[in-house]
Length: 492
Image (cartoon, rainbow, N blue to C red):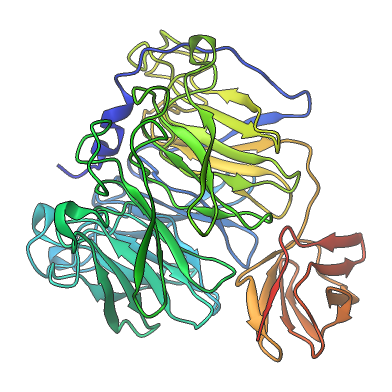
């Protein structure tokens, strides 16, 4: 079986209905519907490139049927730049489940769940880590062999030290570090404690927090509880040297089975979702915050509004919008019950304000039955807020061809600038993403002027200036001043 439909299994049994709570400023637009030949079943978030376009992966489809890497403009013009399993025996990998990461070199880095030939894992191969240029030139950096892990589901991230860090899901679940040349070191192997009290099965990538440590989740394991199958999962901290600390074990009542990566918000806390649990352990997931020391607060229990108006089963994590709200997707429930998604609704896009109030901003499958769902169905991907201020996302199914969609959602937010790498030392040069950069006259970090070079209308390279401290970056362009969505951290 080529497709990773198992990610949907727990979502299709919910029997909830919902009502729409819409913001007057919101504008939802269908941008693209996949149709097998150009890919199908996108399962993770989009990422913005230095050229201003968006890049992503599909788990299946393409000429060989094993997934693709694509580029799509913000207007919805899609180009497939790589088709997996193009090499004999799928030596280049197959079925990319995770999102791409933009590296400091301007290339993208990603993982495939299958392929690579080495070892014996799911479907006979253990997956890969790859690098790909914006023009589609792919280099396989590492092929997993089960001994060093297998079948990565999460993305890799580039840390402040320039290395890449990630997780593997199958059998010997691991956390690993990899150089840009592909030399891999296993930092930690899960289920090293009795009864897998340290967790097992990370389905998400890591984040590097302001304290320099990495934080992540395991979908299963942790201290045994009756609220979940195979225990309820964990939140962990791991140092760059590989010392792991479990900072929270879910027990079902506070959520269970976190599938998504965490977010470090501007308030310093971490935010995430669980796909199950909450609401007396029988609920379909939660949104939570947790401090780096492990104090967890459940922000929202899904399916607690009448008719599951708030959605259910969030596979993806949340992001922090420039308005200070959290945004995310729920893979099931919503207002359109009876439209074909096993009578449970086809999923939602939601926002949560700083006070913890959840608002459903879009209900999927609003047009036609499940075989149509021109606006998409079953979103498993998280959202990206591009630097034009608009949110972009994907659905796993729907679109008229039932192969998934790409959509945009405007909430009336203003353009901003973002970073390729959100931290650096004085003297280091980093990348700034945005638009309208031609003719830029000033780049400053927390009020200190920086030297810079306008590479293109959508990309600037700037050097961290002497005397700079952690703070927001401002870029003065001919059309106005743009400010970064998050502070830039100056490392000592």
